[in-house]
Image (tube, rainbow, N blue to C red; front, side):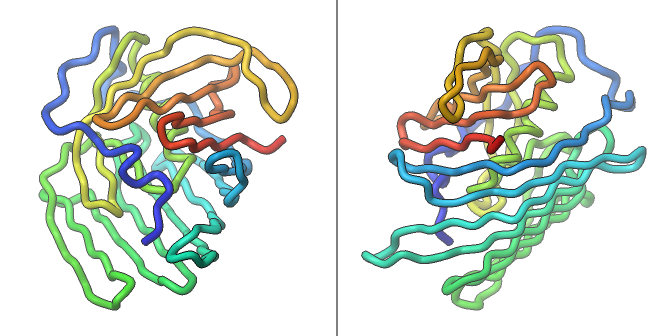
Length: 239
């Protein structure tokens, strides 16, 4: 699989420490989650694709899905890829199931079921082989997959469940079959340039073992921009 975020967001190993602040009850209802839009994805200043996403919620579940188109360079050739991720969570943002498929010269698909313990993953590789694994994951693990920008919106929603400060979460990257830890912290409000206009946005930083991922949100906590400077990667919400 071609992954512009693979490696750049490799997670830290280890167990998370408790987060400060007041936390919602595990069974408390969340604010209604509903968002949709398109992110323009760029690498080294060049647009390489788009992600059209939708997040919708009901009293029973939250669904987040997208259609992602990327142009990647591999062995001197340009490859067009289409991926379709779909994540279903319970109303407290605990993952239930995740499916992902990639269409193009290198087709593959992945299914994760978080409901049993351990969680089960079923991955059909580009060569047609099957790779099945089980993982001991906490029920509230954060799913943060390669090349899926809107998953950061769900990270923001999880962060908002507790009253600010630096928070540590268990996370899982399905395509990499990689569990680990990430830290999230809000660092303030600042002027940010989006498509030639300067606006004031909230700035959050997600820290992993290898990178710092910068997120900017509007007053409704909707993700507007994501940047990984070390990897020269950026995604900006299209107006």
